[in-house]
Length: 455
Image (tube, rainbow, N blue to C red):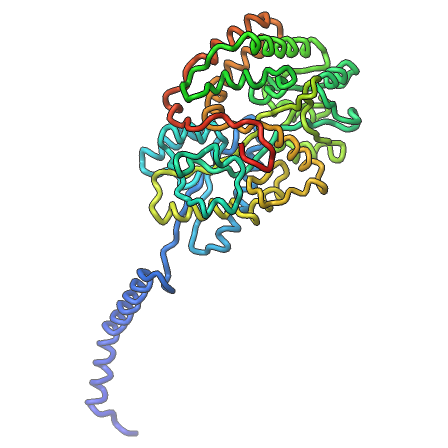
């Protein structure tokens, strides 16, 4: 057996001693190569972008709207991350009444969310406090999407918020009890006189549609949206006072009918129709899915009844908005706006409409299949006569929501005369806008508009 030379043995020993240093050198070279690649804009591995999205998913008393929005947000997030593998979207949900306090806390730490989805009133408060910033999206990015009601949120050449989804108000009823929907307020009361159980909410923003038949809706809304951004309303003209008085007296007469029931929330109306304790209610389109689970094919929807003078009802539609946080890095802001464009493109807006009944697209390129779905036809028809509030109107009605409810209760229950109630209503409207929210006001109130055009 041949003997190993001392030189061979020593070489092997030296190799073993040098191996750890060689391995360390290889790892350092690999790390340097990877770091250099990450710094290049080309084919290197870039660090992931983490995007934080806050969803103000309605009020606690509105589980239908909250569930609908949460379902849509989750599906859209998953789709976006599939086509953008280097992006991590983190969703957080909050009640609409809690979102401002939550943002104040996070902003104090420099940790505001990058994107927010909320209704108009909440978005206005956040913008007024400087907790959100206008979008830097350019017209050539937004114009092809033909976004409805976008102009109402313009500030100079930028937008303080961007419309996302529309949720009109409708009539929901049990077709076993009501063969065809009432077309006028007179027909609605006639149904009640025949024993059909009618439910209405005591929320000004959800009851104001009944004033259209008396010409009272515009004066009331003008009270709570004074022109010029002064924050204070002017007293009603004698003619406008008579219209509002006629409406208040109609509300009182309606409540005297035992088959007409006024309740504190739209959620209670939905629950009672689902339990077959009511036959007809005013409802938001987001309630359709839940009512269908309870009533099945017996659920029918229609536009709200208009005035006996032929004037159509003009309900206040709900509008979901996209707003951008103030603490984002340039990469996060760019990705947040990219995600916003994804939510607004033709593909996403069509999917959002199909996946959760009750939502209409703001993207006018999307065809709403009204011939295939009666509820979509009713939603589109309702929206064609709806009033879509801007920041100022939404904030004032939200700030005065509870006092307004108390006044409406005093009217329908006969605790005060209509003249006294009108005086109290004017006094309430004459209060100035909260200074925190006054900065959010930048455009006049939206006016009734067709679904194919902006206000």
